[in-house]
Amino acid sequence: MKKQSELNRREFFKNASLAGAGLILSSGAAIASTTKKEEALPSLPTRKLGPIEVTGLGLGCMSMVAGTYNPTPPKDEMIAHLRKAVEMGVTFFDTAEVYGPYGSEELVGEALEPFKDKITIATKFGFEIQNGRRMGRNATPESIKKVIDGSLKRLRLEAIDLFYLHRMDPNVLVEDVAGAVKDLIAAGKVKHWGLSEVSPATLRKAHSELPVAALQSEYNMAERVVENQILATCEELGIGFVPWGPTHRSFLTGRFNEYSRFASEDRRSQLPFFSAEGFEQNMGFLRLVRNWSQKKGITMAQFCLAWLLAQKPFIVPIPGTTSPQHLAENLGALSVKFTATELAEIRKEMKQYQLMGVRAPETAFIDQ
Image (tube, rainbow, N blue to C red; front, side, top):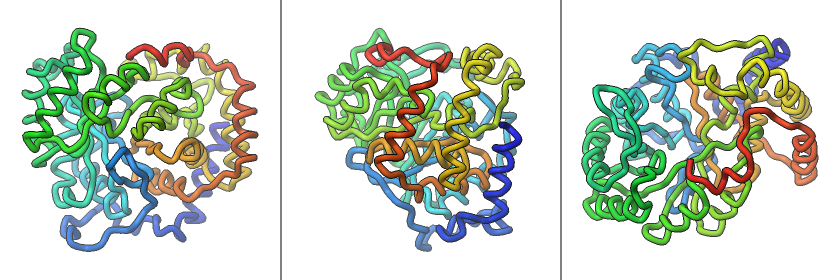
């Protein structure tokens, strides 16, 4: 299966199947110019996150600094990568103060400063950081009003486009969080706000206090807990939805097989889904993804991203990649279409698999 998926990707690049969409990288892709600010950028399909219009796929920036899944990439390569993403038409970038900590915001700020009037940058707050380490959740109004200035400085912005509460602080009412962000909006430091991994009830409370532009939570073909009333709540309230982990930490791309194991510093090593037992039970699910991607003539990554896009018109996935080639591949998902019959068939096949290490449906009603 791994061999087949790698062949799919190699065939994708060999045939340059994105050329018609204007997405193939030039031979000088590794070096991105900072002088193109005034030039018109390519136009990709857009979607709305509440009142914010962004490209249908964004770019997650967590893995571009020390970290969670990959060895730390060279900074100059990541700056070039981010600038190339803008030149390819991407207008939505996602980071957080806790990524690094701080390093991702600093990288995004430096790389995207020449384009800041043409793009949307989202960042997140809600963790206590001491001596470069995440210590726990802290979303008191006092903390929120303190950390905003650090994020603005690192991102080199006058106002944050989309300011998410990263995770609920169990000691702070969401209404108080909303009140603090409302003050920041009044002060001109924030334009819009959002939440991450909250229940429908919490989302409603927050929205009633201050209109929420977007909810960011985990969602992909394997992890579908948000289909239990969370997406419906977003649709009812006019809130955009931003899936993180849209390829389930690369599982759905066919990158791994049943023999894959992870270093202790890799987040996947701590998750039952990616354990030896998890792989034994879950690998069969990839047959569905592989077979359908071959049927559609696309890669596995494009298939699972396109499937997400087909679920609701207000969904904007943010796959994170440090590879310009994989970014071009991902953007190809924007042109993939499904018929209603295909979507029904895919859904029917998905129900045949009992996956290990995914959330139970009732956890949708608990703030994570």
